[in-house]
Each structure stands twice: as structure tokens, then as C-alpha cells.
Length: 125
Picture 1 (tube, rainbow, N blue to C red):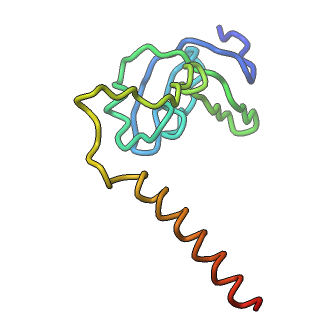
Picture 2: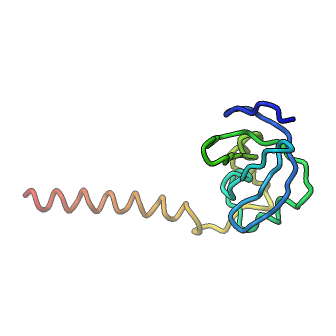
């Protein structure tokens, strides 16, 4: 007997198959849905098998139900908190060499802005 499954609902399921484009998850004995590769986790997923295996128990959110075709779109990513984008704190041993990375770009940008202002003044006169 199937339970009623609705869009937006978070349910438990079991990975039944893996393809390069996504994972098939059984959420009920009569209902199986697809977790697209983009909905596996936050960030880029190159190979689903680095994240999931057949037989894994997973928590999924029902994103969309196409009742006419019996298709269920699922997301694992929607059930996990997005990692913070905080920059790592550097220790004294991890300081970068002077003159590399974004600091040079920042300095160059200021220099380019000044050059642009100078050229603008030249053309106006």
C-alpha cells in the first residue's frame, strides 16, 4: 500500500540505481524518483559514485511530481545545510609571498583607474 507523497515533502529513501546523470531512489514500494546529479550535494559533482552507492539510505525532498508520467524529481541537496563560504583563517606559517595573488590585481586595478582618469583629463583638454 502506497502512502501519499506530496511536493515539498522530505522523505527517507533507498538508492536503487546510479547513472551518470543522477541516482534513482525508491521512496515507497510503488514510487521511485530521480535525484539529478545537480541535486546530490552543494557544489560540483563530477562522479555520483563519489557521493552515493546503491543501497544507501538517503533523505530526499520531493521537488516535483509529474503525475501524468509518474515521474518524481527529488533532491538530497535540499535536505542538507549549505556550507558557509567563510574564508579560511591563515596562520603565520601560511602567509603568501609578497606580490602574488589578488593583492597584485588590487594594486594594478587602482593603477589602471588612475591611468584611465589621466587619459580622460587629457582628452577633455
